[in-house]
Length: 184
Image 1 (cartoon, rainbow, N blue to C red):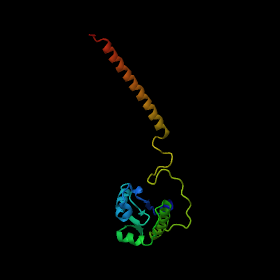
Image 2 (cartoon, rainbow, N blue to C red):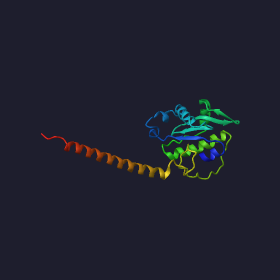
Image 3 (cartoon, rainbow, N blue to C red):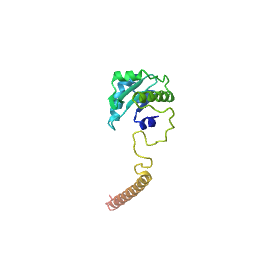
Image 4 (cartoon, rainbow, N blue to C red):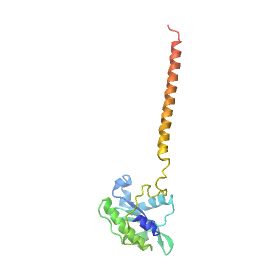
């Protein structure tokens, strides 16, 4: 759904909070997601400018922030505008990931249509993207890859051999110093 929206010029970001385990134990984002939305939008804006809204979905509420494309321009989402958009959305009412995802899918469709980017009725399943939502690197471009692991292992072995050699040399020097000392 997110890929389809982005492909149609509506790259919405979605956050699902099932319970306070998803918020690091902080209940505030669940109790007042609209009050928390500036934190999320500021964090995302620090990475790349937002071109569409940020949607937070909780079991009982939605929150919107960021920008909504309207009339060919990006309009900041104000609290009254967010409330207007949210009125047309139905909350999940269950503290389950699947229920929140379903509510988010409906919300994404309605928000994209309101932003002038209606989504097709049928959207094919997403391709596996294990790079994460913020990465633009294609698969296989992992930093270092298997050679990094080999290099670290080899470096560790060389360091261990060096330390053993230093330890043996110190032990021999201490042994020689004790054997040459006078006895009483």
